[in-house]
Image 1 (cartoon, helix red, strand yellow):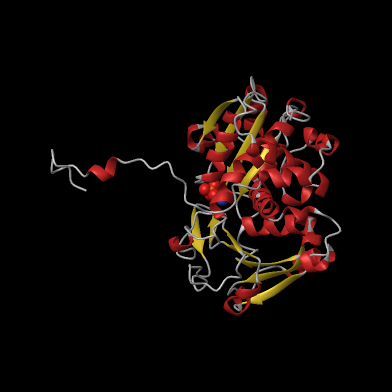
Image 2 (image 1 turned 90 degrees about the vertical axis):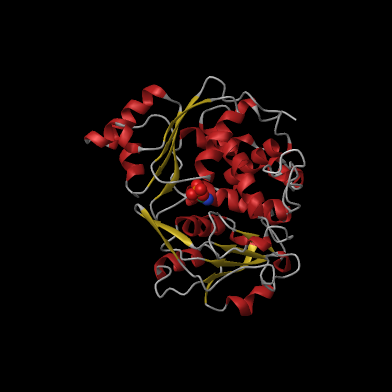
Length: 362
Ligand code: CP
């Protein structure tokens, strides 16, 4: 719309709309909160843990974390001081939109302070300093470290000298545990009854994962966390075009834990009308660059999803996730990204010994 007073000005370009897209996923934290009975004892082990992998948690610890996350999400303005006086080192040596900013948002929302490093060449690492020595220094400066690195080994090299917790925010192709926590938190908000261990068989859900476990840390961590809650899934299909998408021994390990993982190859179109959850990712970081996979799997508003299905994506997206899905009821990927802030708030609170400030507070 051109301004009458100044024809060179587009008046619409200045309009800020505070309306969110009318998508699902924001209304549910209270239902999940009610479903999980508070038991802070299961959070106690976190006081002595680094967060390295999605399979290091017990189901009970995760459920209590999700309860706390739901509490934060249901009352976002209520808990603004649990991390007051605490400092986070946010070290991201690989690009990130969501993980870095949601961790930093989480820490800020809890009242803490942050030192952020986004380029390793501004530290002693550029002069050959070992990660172990850098970790030794971090002990003096902060109460927690969040690390994203292109190399799988960096996490362990730094961990050895740390006396404060470190959180794996994505280490090469290996893992992205807090992403998987946010993913399953979203699924539990969508269907809170899935947290029940004795779930009737006809209430278990069928999931389709479009992705390559051996090449994508998000998918690797997701499968590990699914295996902890294997009672919730009747079938988990893996769709991709790769020959060696997942190590057979790794798949056998998931099946031993009761997760019914099925290699679906390229049969996605045929299976999609039966799937309750469709999870898609097409990007894998390979050192300093990224590779895209499976451009033949594209989700659009015309994809024949089950009526009450949801779509998840860790983002960033490419062509595999059409923008025309954003305004549909299938879009739970924005809620998934939003919920990650609250999951990270819960985790950070427990790692730095501050859970007493939020448990039993109603
Ligand atoms: N989901 C995720 O890891 O996104 P970023 O790479 O933007 O952190």
